[in-house]
Image 1 (spheres, protein in one colour):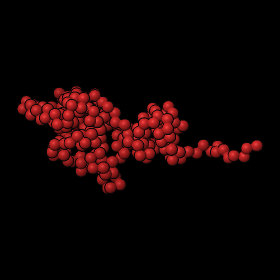
Image 2 (cartoon, rainbow, N blue to C red):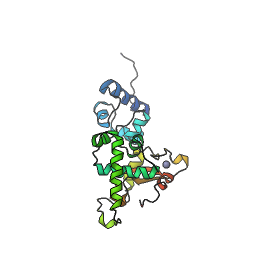
Image 3 (cartoon, rainbow, N blue to C red):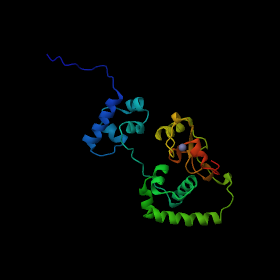
Image 4 (cartoon, protein in one colour):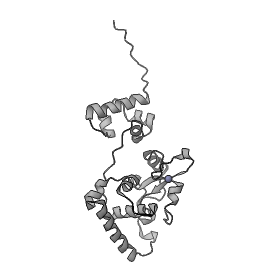
Length: 216
Ligand SMILES: [Zn+2]
């Protein structure tokens, strides 16, 4: 007869999930990053437990002190230039590569694959911007066709806030610092940016206002 206690209450704690996540990452896949798919393949707990305990996958990662994997997304040179233009306006000066990565959520891989180097990208951007401003016609919104409405839905808004950990992506403050959070278009809607998660980010009112003359 074995009198060992077996827990049949099925109670799991946040810590159990984090422990299992780290176990899968360090002992099974042996990488310093882990995707949700990898965890669900090898881990003990399912999507439901993650959602109940942490809300989102990225929240779980941040609780476990693991950096989220940035999604590599193909962008055209033109799209990159538009992002740089936005950043430059927001910062009021030439952005650096680190700022590009943290503020757009794209990795430098996208710069390297399109331009080789950040400095070359900036030089090409300046040429593009100069030409664009030269033959700039007044933007009329009727010319830009959108596939999405300007206002994000409630659930999309929630997804953006959750992905950004309920913090302004520029200054890092959250509502507990007494500021209001807005969901903002990275490429302004007025310039053809769509209301999709990859084009949205969390900003506080201050950083949002810093965008000044943008009609977004
Ligand atoms: Zn801010």
